[in-house]
Length: 413
Image 1 (cartoon, rainbow, N blue to C red):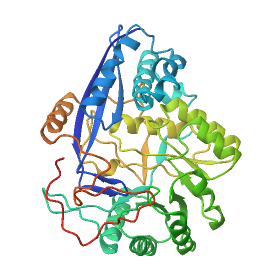
Image 2 (image 1 turned 135 degrees about the vertical axis):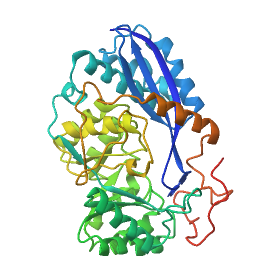
Image 3 (image 1 turned 90 degrees about the vertical axis):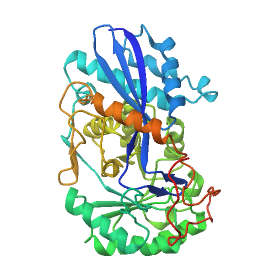
Image 4 (image 1 turned 180 degrees about the vertical axis):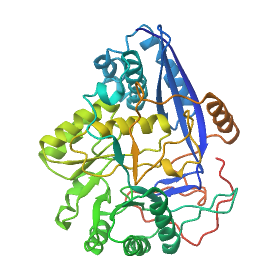
C-alpha cells in the first residue's frame, strides 16, 4: 500500500447542553476535524482530532507532502516523520500524528481483514466499561432544557444516566463554582448513587492548600480517584498523604513525564488519551510501563466522535491492566458522523467494534450536514465561558462562576 491522498473535514456536532469546566466551556457543540487517508488499493482509513477548525484542516492537508507515497504499514516511522521531538518544539504535531496513526491502523486492519485490537495483539475484553461524565451545564438555548447548576439538578442527571446507560462510576467535572459549593454537590451525588464509585476532576483549578482541604472532606466517600485537583507533578505529590488515589491526564502525557512519575511518584492512575499521547500504540507502550511499576490506568476522553471513540475502545480492549472504567463525553452528543449512528451503552459499557480496522465508516450525509453546521456556527474557544464575557481562568483559580448567574446571551464567538 501507498498513501495517495489525505483529506480533512471539520464538523460541529451539537451537544444536549453547553458543558462548563474550569478553563471555560464547550459552547453547545464539539468541533472535530475528520481525517481520511486514501491508498493506492482504494482503501480509506479514518482519523479524528479536536478543535482547530480551519487551522486543523490546513495542518492535516499540509502533511500530504510528508506522507504521499508512504506505506501505512510502516507505523514506527510515523512519529519521526511527523512529530520529531526536536522539530515539534516549533510546531506541536502530537494530535496530528495521532489522527494519522488512527487512519493508518485502520488501513492496515482493512487490508488484512482484522480489527485494530487484533493488530495490537488481540482483545482481552469485548466490552469496555465507562463512567458517567457529569458536567455543570447551561440550559440549551434551543430548548431551555439541560441546566445543571445546583445539587438537585446534578443528582437528577446522574440518576437519569444511571437508569438509561447503567453507569456505576460517576465523574464530576468541577473547578467551575466555589470549592465549598462543589463539595456540597459532590457529597449529594455520593448520597444519591447508592455506593457507586465517584471521581472529582477540577482540571487543576485548586491551590495545593484548597486541594488538601477538599480531599480531606471527601475521604469518607467511595472515591475511585481524585483527578488533577491541583497543577503539576510536585503539587500532586503534596497530596499523597490524603490516602486518596490520585490521577492525571494533564501532567503525565508523554514518556518523559511518565518516567518522572515512576522515579518520584506523584499520581497513582495514568489516564491514557489516544490523542494526547500521539496515538493508540503510544498508549499501549505507556500502559506496559504502568503495568511494570504497578500504576493504574484508565482511558481518557478529550471530547470524541465515533472515530476517536473506536480508538478508545480498541485501546481498552487490549490493556491487561485497565483497572478503572473509561471516560467518555460521548453521551452528551445528540448525534454522530458514523454509519449506523452513535455507539450504544449497555450496562455501563460499549462493545468493541468487530469490523476490520477501526470498525467504523463515515456517514457522508451526516458529515456534510455537520460540516455545514460548522460553517454556520463556527468554532469556539475552549478557554472562555460564554456566560462570563471578559473572564479567563487563573491557575490556581479564584475567579469562580456564580451558579445563579443568568444564562449566556449567545453561543457564538
